Image 1: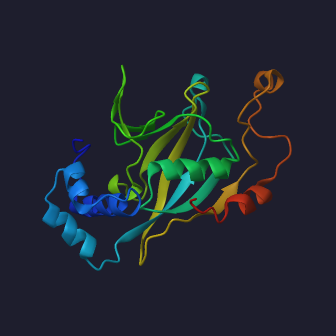
Image 2: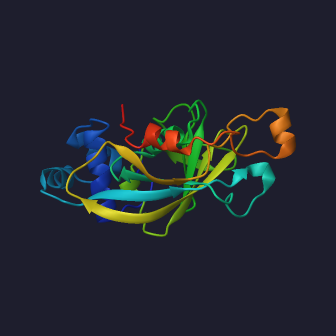
Length: 224
């Protein structure tokens, strides 16, 4: 597979560790996958490093595409903390847990004018009529994100929910981490599937607010 996008040395090192730790590829397979020398891969894998990144991300909600909203819904957000060596697929799982939604639909992340998606099979780069999608197996640390960076999470290509994701902080951690946690929140749960009555009334939130329960539900989410 061809290199999907140009990586800086720091971002490339995160991608190498992700392929080794998560995808369980050999150094030769990683080198071939990323189109780099095997000696470089081995050097990265054997280096003592404290450059693991910990991202703090604010999740906001724009509504559905047809609503054509230009600013997020007022009074709602979820703040999460997640390691930079986990994939966008894992970030999707964390967001779904934070929302209390069922995680049964396809999704995509728009980052720096590139589209990373899960379209039912993540093993290949998929070409669409309108967009060129890349695999969502890529890890956060390889995306070139910085504090203040906003990218978009698109969930359910039928209902087309839009969530701006803003990096509110990045820290270096001593170790890799598979866990994620909610560190802040505002507002009730969002309705995933609206009834006709809820649709007509423009209802966005569930009728009974359970934000504290939601926080407890996802505050120590662990990758399975």
